[in-house]
Image 1: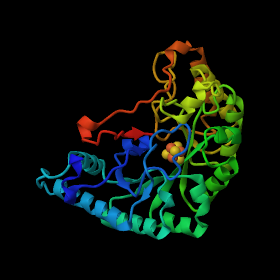
Image 2: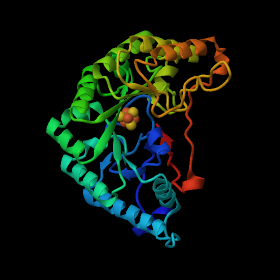
Image 3: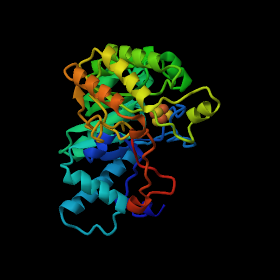
Image 4: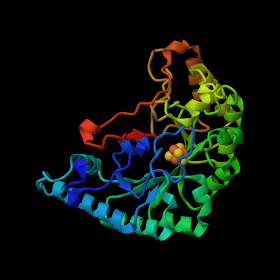
Length: 353
Ligand code: SF4
């Protein structure tokens, strides 16, 4: 990969980050590579890639490279030797105030606690402008850490955890091989909140398909009611052609919901929700149209506050159900190769999940 040449100014970047992190131009710090579970039937992103925990020294060296690039940019030095991708990321991050950072890849919480705490402290000590550091985490990893460890991590600067709940129904979780049951999701979510984290739970409308649609909606609302996370982020199922779930669908054991069926699912979920969370449709997969042809839901990172906006959201759902189904754009993979822009390796996708 040509990009790796200039070691002093090179730092590693993983393929996936949440959209709000992209919107905020967060600094991306790769603490682990790929996914520690890597078996969810709907998720093809890390297939065939080995999970690795990077050492504290490796990550520190990346942070040092970011600092060098930042110093060049701030001091008007020559950036000729800086790989384009690294330069772009740091430039955007600096321009947006250098306030946020995201630890990649899919489950950085799994790192040894001392290493993770060390990375967080080094990051904060190196960049005083940082106000928020966030990461993905799996519920079972949250559960495996002691509360005291989680509190240490939180105190070291990791503010928010993004967790893939996907569903609150055990049959659905088993179908898609999530590797976590509802009880673990609920316990993990509550524990994260108890440790002081802001919690973002990702929910996947359509994951039960036609056969489990209603159970998926009701039970997901129930699990969310128990957890009461800060954010609920809606990520409708997008059946990726190379996913295991597509194979299950091809065997006739899973049937995708239509856009209206997905809205009916969301309606059930909304009606059952009794939380004080913000519900966000902050991804282009939430691609329902309103009567004017625009986006039915606001693609806003802060979303709608519940319970205050529940009635408004239910009205939006009814509006979406009035729109002809053919007008709704089916959720689809909006991945894009940035090779031409960021000179990534051939298989590198940069996705906002
Ligand atoms: S959804 Fe998350 S936990 Fe599941 S395989 Fe994909 S990255 Fe891993």
